[in-house]
Image (tube, rainbow, N blue to C red; front, side):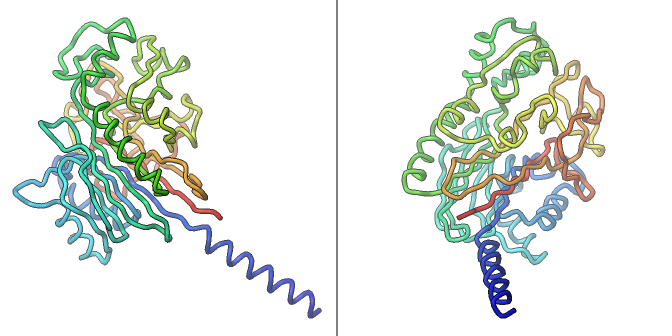
Length: 343
């Protein structure tokens, strides 16, 4: 009996030690649509959702610092008033929040005439060094609109392009690839130093993993299979697209994040292509493989509905949704990703 009791105690100790080592953390990518100002009660809804979800890191898109305010200070103060401690630093266009003290920050690609931005913070998570990058990439020369018969800079109707080369020429005239190359250079230094690297952002560009043979005749792709530049650059550099890693079945799990249906906003303010199906997965969380790091979960954060041909529609896919508490403050859906460390 004494030996059996001793074995049980040893087993419990081993299990306890293992659970302590299985440490998790979450990253939320969220385009907050001009700081929530486009929706009544939008800013307060942003605060409410962060308080509810308590993400360890938040990568934000469309930080504007309206009325000579610093959004980073305002959101940190609002969260503190709700009992949540977060850290941030001044940025414009994209932004970062961290539940862990920020040891350093860097402007990787500064915003210039609304061509996007990338920022970085360095911190420590469960004793490990981590660099979290936020990216809101150039919205101009947005060639997936050209495929839908709309100019990707003016959004006027145009003939649908017939070749992949034509589409990529427009796409690569943007500054999205310029920004992501600067990210890759900065991230390589982090990786070489043994730092875990995470990238979250609204890329304003689809993925080569989504525009494949199986989808060429869906969602107004007009028969085109396109190796979109920015996600392919990341793929070639060894970065992992969290959503597509967990859900490789593109037909069952399209993962659309834009445009999100928002019942408080007229449809004409939610669509850029009123005569087309513009649904895309353009909000991402990427990571570079790291010793002991396991991708545990990814879930779309926001309403299930989308806009198709100026109509509000419910998505019929198998995608999982974390629905909002109440007011949805944006025209995008977010992505909440959970990671775990294992020894």
